[in-house]
Amino acid sequence: MKLYGAPNPAPNPRRVRIFLAEKGVSIPETFVDMRKREHKAPEFREKNPAGQIPVLELDDGRVLSETVAICRYLESLYPAPPLFGRDAFERAEIEMWIRRVELVMMVPVGMFWRHAHPYTAALLTQYKDFGESNRERTVEAMTWFDRQLRDRPFIAGETYTMADICALTTVDFAAFIGLPMPEEAEALRAWRARVSARPSAAA
Image (tube, rainbow, N blue to C red; front, side, top):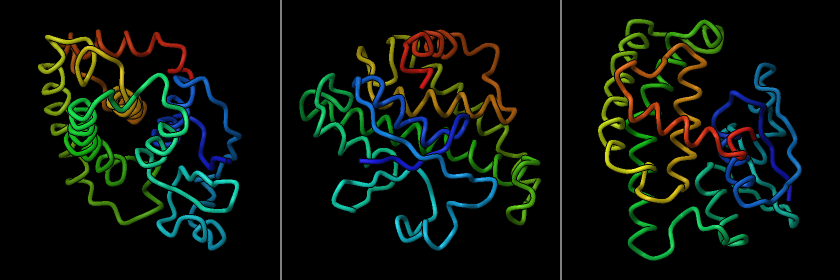
């Protein structure tokens, strides 16, 4: 198997690296230069028509994209420790929290990145008022997650899971692009410190 990804702070390839580090598994990774638009090149689109990374290429030439889908596949190959739950309810609950991270928090972070950040100005037509409006939405999202974390150590409950990986890569990328956590989000800050202390967070 081979991964196509990008170095930090790109959040989606980092999700897969953290997941693999938690599993103690190593897969060779080839970096795709996003600044040179290599992920949009015709030869790369043959692997992923969406022109996005990461991509996992299997030994038989088949490919998977989308971070959660890639990690689900890897979970089936390397089930310990379980990062998608141990029974039907846990799996559904973790899926619920992954969706909340992506829809509630990653969407406004992504919209700010696309429409308000100078790094992306040359890549698309920016609607800066819309982009800037996502600052407030990101604060609201982080405040909401802060409330959820006041009575449990991890995003989906008592155990570190894929939901924490998705959330950590999101808040770290948000900080990189100028969307820090609210000062008053003490539970969210404590959670970030806990999961950032795990060796996998350096992946």
